[in-house]
Amino acid sequence: MSDNQDEQEKKEENKSSQNSQDNSTTTNEDSAQSKEQPKPAAPARPTVGTPVSRPKIGTPIGTPIGTSAAKPSAPSSPSPQASTTSTPTVGTPVSRPTIGSPVQRPSIGTPVGTKPAVGAPVVAKPTAPVGTATPAVSRPVISSPTTSRPGTPVKKPESKQDISRRNFMRGLVALGGVVALLQFGPLFPFLEGSVGGSTISKQNINDSITGAPVTASTFSDPTHADWVTFVYPATGNPNVDSDTFRQCVAIRLPKGFTAPPNLSVTDSAGNVYVGFSRVCVHLWCLWSYVVADSRMECPCHGSQYVPGSGTYPALSLADIKPPGLAVQGPASLQTPPNNQLPIIHIGINADGSFYADNIIGQIGCGQLC
Image (tube, rainbow, N blue to C red; front, side):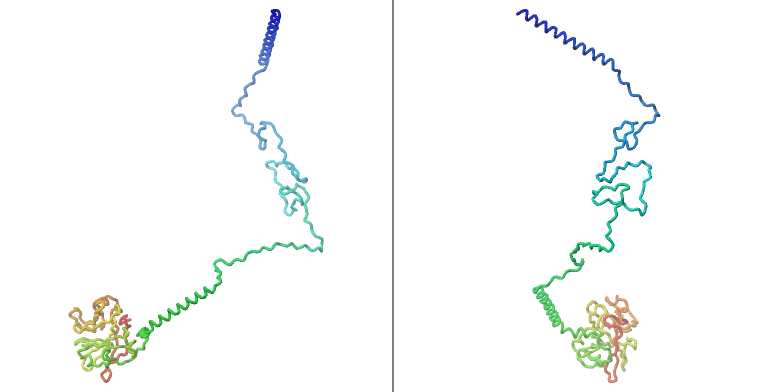
């Protein structure tokens, strides 16, 4: 047993020595190869001012500088008539078609998007033989819906209920108009009985209180006290004659007072009479004559008028010439012609009765309107 163990130990020692020799030889060979290969030299740096080489336009990316690479050829067209064309060089003149030259069109069956080859024959349109009728091409009829013009309302058909409702409203409006006419019918004579609607003519004046003709003795009656009311122009219709704008007054001036002859009348005893419209020129109220003050006074807003020229101690006014002039109140603040009462021109008949024949001015406006 000991002899066998000795032989195995020797074999193992021989193997290990051989492996160590093999490893030493491989390391020696690697060191020798590494000594034999020279180290790469460092790239030389360019000198200042040396021109730098740049790639040409059109050179594919990745091609080393200084080498020329062939340009890739264009892909072949699917059409058998298409031919590859090279990219033109910069500066090469572009050929343009001559005016009048036939246009190259693709032949029937060529795929869409294929350009015709340069120099390909021009395909002419097929022409029908002489005498052959060209078939008419039927076009689809475009039906456009009929629409009404903007802004034109389309009338909606009315029903029987709408018609009956409209007729009822019409009847109601007509009934209301008839009721209004019946209500204001009695006022019609007053509305038509204005001064402008009557003819101004010579008329005998009558006392509006007693209805008797006015004479010089009428002013001496204590119930009148130097002034008499009358209607001018009178129509005989009580409704019309009661109109405010027809109310007038005749005044016998105090002793020492005068008035222009064309505006007044004088009797045989030397008394002077002047007629006035009784409507105040301020707001058309009816004034009254105050004998104690020798003035016409309006009860509404206090306007006062003088009947003629004379001395008025209470007013500190002397020689007032125009009769009917407003001297106090709002009427006196109005500018001419709205500050004087209109004159009713009166006269005396041969029998002593008074008459009126003219209006000087405009009622409610003034003596000079």
